[in-house]
Image (cartoon, rainbow, N blue to C red; front, top):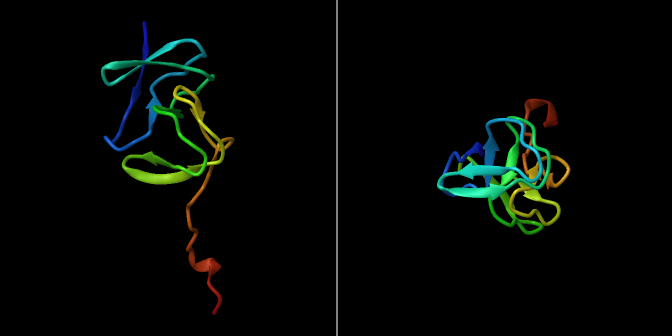
Length: 96
């Protein structure tokens, strides 16, 4: 049985796995199958398409980071292959 991934917005290039998945297993994403390339824990992201270095990682229709390296469809998308584009604008970062 194929596991599933949730795609939160049509512009997303990553999905969120709904169970721990192992390499070589099939993942059902919308109406298509995607072969898993890496072990991916429940709740983590999986690449839905090829993502080139420097391309935004889009989840829930919002860029959440940028690819540090090429990411193939079915690969785990996490801190090892993306960099944050989050700008910390907390009050502690401002000089008086």
